[in-house]
Length: 278
Length: 303
Image (tube, one colour):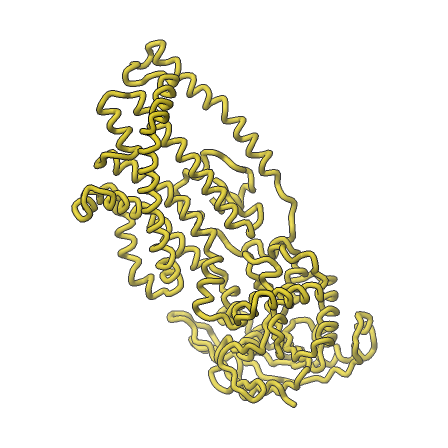
């Protein structure tokens, strides 16, 4: 059964008055970032989104999360149209986005706090999640007293606190060092294996995309559409050493093959990206 | 302030004369700067501050010593400038008779009421002005105009409008603090990391909760910095107002003692004011550190 249906999403950004960019040799103040994205995501599926810079991966995630409105087209979550952040959706950001004045525990409680869940219940949830991520004992630390990897664990725990059916992750491990990154990939898969939530995970790393995903969605260069969807039939549970297997290497070659042209196209487009990204 | 700390590190430590800088620069505290920082070793703040304090003592001692002996040796006119010991005796008598406590009490009350009104007005207004740019565009020019009008120039206006009583004193202390608070609140709101707002919205935060749970706490460092400036400004304004038009308060005591040529009492009043300023500043520094504890050691500026 499809949990999320993305139907012909288009997104055009209107630049600020006086701002112009050159697109295909013409000056314009409008930039099309997504140009007809179709995607059907099954319940409990782990999807990774890869694509060159500027292909609108993050924008697509924001639209699915209800944080940005599409210019046309729509997203349905369990048959209901998304127009604002849905309580069933959790969001994890690259820069953690923890509230620095709240302790780790209070950060995780936040999601339930704004939904009016009783104090005792949300504290219990938050403590459980912290221990799930191996952070028991760090309840009272402020974010800037935690390492990057710990902060991102807290951020993922916060996103999971409201027991979401969809978890949106925007390059969550991109700011971490390689070891921490692989550690967290493993932890994420372990926890996902327990809660079986639907995950859409944006990444720049082909290895990360393959290691995590049931299906890798490759986006085109701007304006972004879905170029190809690649099934990853690697057995689960996956351990780190799977990265060295022949099957993994074949997937890597395949994804890179699909992606290469788009990355080359995007290189020519690079002057554009600062104008509309974020 | 904040940018100085960034550049030079947390060298200051607690300093009893800290906080005299009038810049609103502390408003520009980058609230989320330390986001990606790993835990770091705490610098020895207490050690550094004690050193600073000790180094400062000889010069301060020399100043008091000069005050004591210069009038005795006839370098200064003893009538206008009594030795420190006589001033301290006068101070003790004022304290023992209850006169000093009464005057200080009324001054602090006026400053506190005016400042509290400033907080009540400036913070909600600043949150709105910082968040909604149209609101700020409309009101900014008026705020700038009022802000650059001296509160003492307006004292006659307050007296005309509110009478010679308490209301005009409260009005001037309010006026003295409200703009520090307002400007710093606006600046704090504007520097809230948009990512935090996005994260809050992704969790279904309502507009009201967004102000209460995200924008306000994220702006606290800037607001507290404004409050430090505002409290000082209120305190100094009430003294000035009492010198110009009052029958009570520390400012009146100082001014009246001068008129009566009771110069020892006058200096006793001035010293009292200095001590109050130091104590208030110390309390505010402590409060600022407490309110922004989450920012970590290296971020809280005491300069």
